[in-house]
Amino acid sequence: MSPRPTPPDVDRVAAARAAVAARRARAAVKNSISARERTPTEVAELAWSSPESAEASLRVRDFLMSIPSLGATRVLKVMTELGISDKKRVGGLGVRQRVKLLNYLEARAGGKPARLVVLAGPTAVGKGTVSAYIRENYPDVLLSVSATTRAPRPGEIDGVHYYFVSDAEFDRMIAAEELLEYAIVHNSYRYGTPRPPIDKALAEGRRVLLEIDLQGARLVRASMPEALLVFLLPPTWEELVRRLIGRGTEEPAEQQRRLETARVELAAQDEFDVKIVNVEVSSAAREVVELMAVPRA
Image: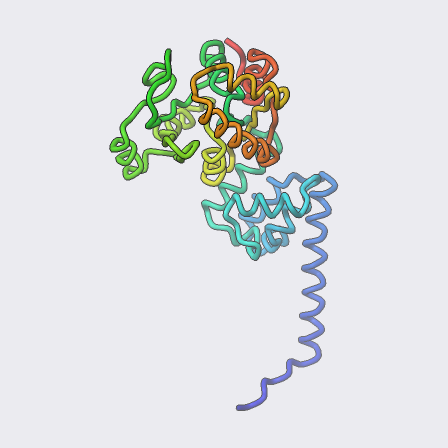
């Protein structure tokens, strides 16, 4: 096998100079973002319109790391949520990845209000009560109605509080890909979020609120990273216990199981974008709606 020819010294020097120039150009782009001289959205859009630019050659990881207040741990989490490989460069992203990244950048910068808000929290924290208050007092917000295989509780209305469906119907909705997310909650019943009404509302420019469990919130974030995740907290652990036992809808064994679940759910609060303490229902509801930038009717 013939030895590989050695490039002339002049070629090596030129290549080295070009590499240094490229690194300096990328460093200048990152510095401009860090100094807030250019917005990340501007840099990304230039990268996609100019494939040979320094902006296009930036690794997505380095691009995100240059954004003030984004650390290595958060950047890794964002890239995982957006489904972007650590080796990808900004200019090499596919169309769907570009849309996801742009949505994330716009949402983070506040360029567009969060149109899809996910409200989750531990069992008995009052998610349903806060959501009901929003339904009654903020008609501009579409409250997504979940489907569930459990039986209605006293006072619950089919199609208003939940769609109460059979296991067979739930299976049909899964097969037809009509659910944005679904999961088994408390090791017993299945809950899911019908997707067609949400897609229609978002396409019309409406604001949408999803009140779901922790598992569902994680699934929504994976499929729709532009969603704003809000975690509803009780004032204290003792108050959460009082609320769960006080509503008297479960047997003691079921109450104990839900309290154990609540401990696990509370530990996940740092996964969410915003935390709201539910001291008073109207105040908590107002905070949720203000995050969506929807005026009160």
